[in-house]
Picture (cartoon, helix red, strand yellow):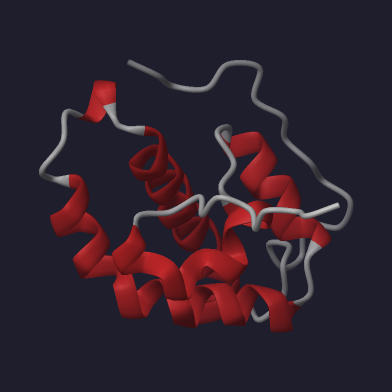
Length: 115
């Protein structure tokens, strides 16, 4: 049986970020935060470094579209860039996935901000 390669999740010019797409293109902030907590610092740092290289290009690309009516691949790119933001704190300041000195403290939002 012939299998087809998976359709890319991101716009073509962001193909270098595709290895992060399945794990980090998450719609909800709570899911992105949980993925951060479940990831190693090596994984977080890899996403952060790759995402920062493409941050300005991603913003310029996404600015061409209506935020509330993004095409599928652009929506994934936005979610991926939101994941880059959520891992930036551990990478730049904390040097660990969790906020330091918070122990087992965990805050769950019941509503995501939205349009």
